[in-house]
Image 1 (tube, rainbow, N blue to C red):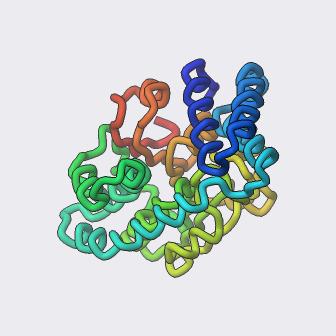
Image 2: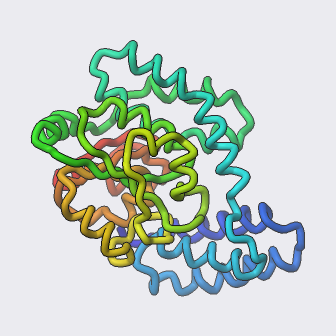
Length: 282
């Protein structure tokens, strides 16, 4: 998915917020914003929004020496999600059409970030979002492909979502699942450590994509992951960053996300904040 002009102010805001997370030094904050502006002026040189976001986050690492600006937020997200795990299990047990609601639960996990930042009742926020159904849901096609699949690849997104993804995996047939994560800390995305801390190692094989952008840019992934990607019978791509990186890919690929950005909602032909489970070929 191409970078749009609307990405520019969003990225600048992200740079400012991250700078304030890691340093109280105004001069460093100013330098981060200034260098971020230089990158944003050259946005056409970047292949997609995850590529651009990585460039900006690299500035923060270089200037402050902080390797994981979102570490505290990720731990907070993961703690909140782990506390919700028993509730999510009970929610799934009560549902007719378990697979539909397991997919919806996995998509709902993305909201845990906003809930924590606003310092509101996380459980209530998740409950409210769980009640919302998909705007687009290619479930019938997914079930058909699931019947003949011998392996599944899930591309992870934010740290808090990993626990919600575990719920999804537990609701799938007994088919080997591989879970791909970022190769190093970037924004609040999951790495191998956070995936294991969420318990995903109990239900899947966890691998690094080899890509350190907040989206799976295939050209930058390691050979092992690229092989896994092309050999996967089914791929579930979580979140907006992965969609931005893979939106032009075809094959047995399903995008599972909440459209929290107007540009992504427009690309998917849905309303802002709609939930989507969409086959890449449809």
